Length: 368
Image 1: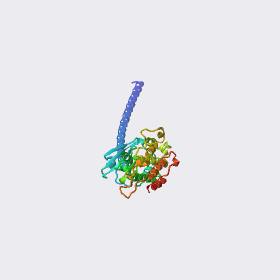
Image 2: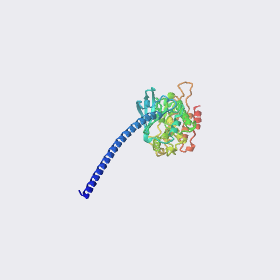
Image 3: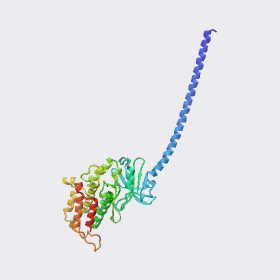
């Protein structure tokens, strides 16, 4: 065999062995790669399962931690609240009111659900809740508990008042709603509650949405102001919608354009409208407003009082403090002073409105 032929065979053998070796190496690499991927998927699944278990545990803990309770709500649990059968008793653009029976604590509570898209995510939210939850006064509805859900929803828990609200009390027009002492005591109670918000706290609270629907009646018709500071939990858009709804109902002060500008003076204006409601027995919005009344809504309420003699509007025999013969009938002068106070509160100029302390002093003077 020639030398050239031997060299050619040797070269082919080397090339063949090299190719086979390369193929074997590539095959081994592919097998190792698939084993690696399979193991990685398995490890990843195990990690995900572990993370899911941890998140479930943290979620359960977070649910309990996100329920904040205050004085009077120590027995509340998130399970009892979320599982409570409820009846819808009110709706708005920003939330829903429920009358709920809490089975564990065997009591009826008022639950206010705030829609996630309407609530604020402000970093100061915790401070606001602590502020509202710490408010306690006989004429203010207390916050018993607060829950922040995982999707941004918020739930406020309050006592439930079976006697309803002041708006319905006035609308019903019963003999009770025409009793002077009741009108005077309700007015004084609202003023005391408002005084506590404005002057009795380290950080004053502006109500922002004061109206007769937000005055709940307890035993002996004692008024309790609800919804104070609620706008602080809403985002600017939802808070502004609340203001527009208040304007449509006749409670918005003329100078108030944005909810963020609500002040003690705008609360006083709303309080004045409530006094006119009590005195006239009418809602703040006229069915047939004149151009004047579109600008200044209490005008028709004022006319409702002035168009008739006060003694005809409220008969002295009805307007007595109690059925007792020792109580003297109310005088026309008392009702006139009450009316003048209401109109002063509703002054178009915020600087001319009385302060809440001056209102209390005047109500005390009228009641003597």
